[in-house]
Length: 192
Image 1 (tube, one colour):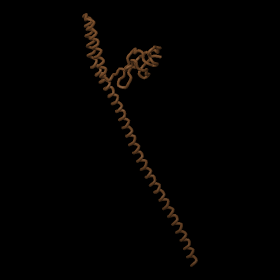
Image 2 (cartoon, rainbow, N blue to C red):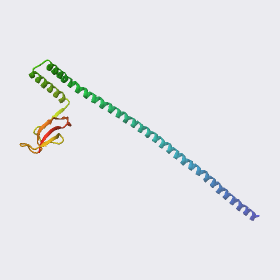
Image 3 (cartoon, helix red, strand yellow):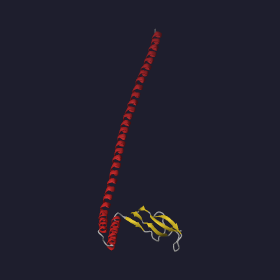
Image 4 (cartoon, rainbow, N blue to C red):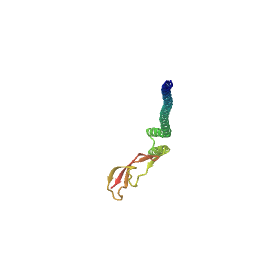
């Protein structure tokens, strides 16, 4: 009987070991899904966080694009207003010149003498020159100076005694600068 008891104990021990192994195995199997679920929860949180960041960046980009478009529209409108204001100021400066030209034409029709016409035209010329000068229009001084391609346009190149090579012999049409920008180069005759 003792032998049976030992056998029984051995069988019971083996069953307990199997049960413990089964229990451990079940426990491990249960742990694995929890671990996977925790990882999935962590990934889900990261995905939500990244989606939120993406949405915030997208909204920021859309706001920046809208701000740039508004800036561009404002800049265009401001440039147009500046151009209109500059044109208006120039017209205001030139209108008295136009009035004086009309007076000169009336004087011609009424038979004014040549001397008074000449002084009238000189006065109008000075008035026009003064109006244009107020816009920073500057005449390019070219007489007897050296030819400079950025300031002058050579209409003809001729040999002429008394002039050095590339010296301007004659100004055919005056040139003008507006500030530092050349509006029209002077047209000149240049020595060979």
